Image (tube, rainbow, N blue to C red; front, top):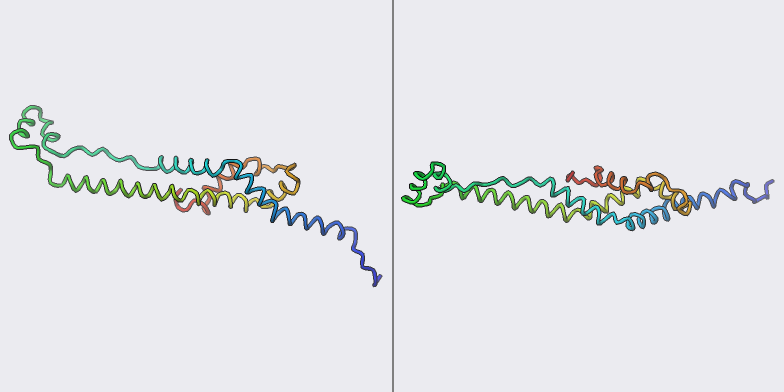
Length: 175
């Protein structure tokens, strides 16, 4: 009929279902994801993991022998030590430059470690955002079902967060 303004049966039920799905996918899903990630202790665990990774990847400082008369001439026993007693415990002329360069390299490595530690919070936040965004529909299903349905990516939250942390979006050239 031309004057009939009633909606078909699917239209009357379909509009609220679509509205609820959109609300779950774009509002409640990300909100539940954010709260779930926050309650899981992710940020503290992530910072600790990144600090451990940075410490493990830090190269060890090579042992620097003393380059003076006693250390070099002492290899020859008492005769070598006698030379040092007679002429003094001199140092090799380039030893100070070697030690200064080694100290400069260690200082740069310490600064690099400090920068990586300062950026760990940003990387952890990035991982949480990537996990929420990449699994928006899954989080929407989880939130829309009033948390009755728990998809595998929500159940394995820590694994997903670690994968997101090491993804190209969050790695930041540090991994």
